[in-house]
Image (cartoon, rainbow, N blue to C red; front, side, top):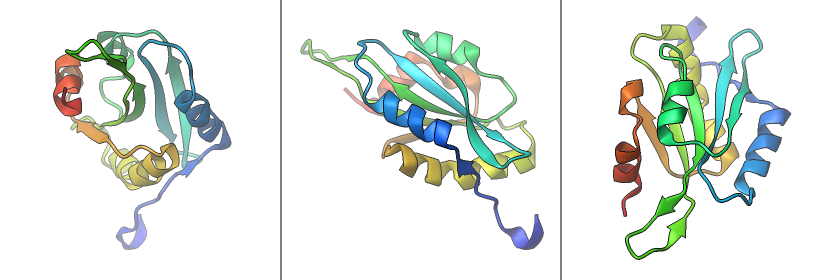
Length: 141
C-alpha cells in the first residue's frame, strides 16, 4: 500500500441486486446476507444468503479468522406484542485476521453501508459476541 491510501473495494452488481432484493423481501423471519472482500479483484462479493436463521446459526456460519460484512433483517418481537424487522449492518473484524485484509474491509465499510442504505452499523471483534442478547442491546427495545 503506497502512501498509506486505503483501497476501497467496488460493490459488485450482484451485491447491489442482492441488497435491493433483501430490503424488499416479504418473508417473516430473520435472514442475513453475508458479504466478503475478494482481495484479488478488490470487490465486495456475496458470500452467502441465509434465510430463516437464528442469530446462533449466523454466528456458526461465519469464518472465525476472516472479516465479513453482515446485512441482517432481524425479526424482533417487542414487549407490547408488535413485531418489527430492523435492518442492521454488522461489521465482523476478528483481531487476528490479516492486517491488509482488515484495512480493505475497514476502507470499504462506509461505501457498502451507504450502498445498502443502512444507518445502523455495529462492529464486533469476537465471534462469540454475536448473540441475540448483544443484538437486542444494540437495537434497544
